[in-house]
Length: 428
Ligand code: DOR
Image (cartoon, rainbow, N blue to C red):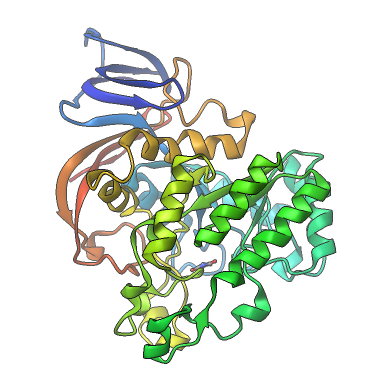
């Protein structure tokens, strides 16, 4: 299959490309970028005039819920949501049931994904057996099975010696230990960001220190072990500063931030809005400014959605009982484009943090994704940076309709997603 994308603004941060040209895809690979490629013998020509053409996005952090919580999402529905959001590679977290802590579950996820979608599903395995924080999972055989990292996401590994061992052991396979940083003691009973609003709403707050204490300890352990630490969904100005200092000291640490922590504040929780209940909680404008600065100076490597789909009933209850999480794959690009339209982030930097940045966290093995170099895998997204649309969760491919963005007007829309040289999403 030969696909020619004509006349788009091709942005490929990996090669520093940003110009209007044509892009040719043959047999699942990018085979050329230049002006005026002839459409001869191409099965499909896509006119991308006025659109951005860039590498398919890589999401280091999603929840696909299968096995075990198929009412919230399945691998198939999650992959469709990814395609609609422009994501061609996604890394599902292991908080399934059973947890993804052993070969059979990892094999099940990979096999199911291959059957249902062309989206590349790169599983993350649990750090500890059953995600219970007691005993390491069989990391060696999981690494051999091709997992891209280890995480107990949803929970912090509070045992310091256990995490130190995980970091030491992970050096053997050079895979990241992806930590959910939250001091369990401080977090106890917390429901939203600590502050005046939490006080007014009568909800127990979660302080910035809850995250920063955990980030601090993990950085110390990364330093001691020489292992690769990746910090999931950092949300506070203090965490950004800790990562900045750790990087300056040469410690092997990387970090991701979510679209919601970059664009929404705790004010979303007003009215006890459970669709804005998420962990870590939405913070303040000061934190947002620091997170953006962290993206700009390279402290934060990647934007990852933490796509956390839940059922209606999981959220349709009192605030304290509602599940944490936001369904994010299908609104990520458009919500982030708000930062570009308001001049806070450049378009090329945004694309870098959705492509090259996460690819670098995955490592050399994945050099053929996240860029548009000739010979790379033809994972491509075409989007209109200026198209306005209104979020309507009834139209989501994800089973998770839980987003505070419902009904909101956003600017920037995915038109076409191509994975491995085949069209996997086309805007209706
Ligand atoms: O809000 C969240 N939801 N944060 C997490 O860390 C876990 C996730 C989930 O699995 O729903």
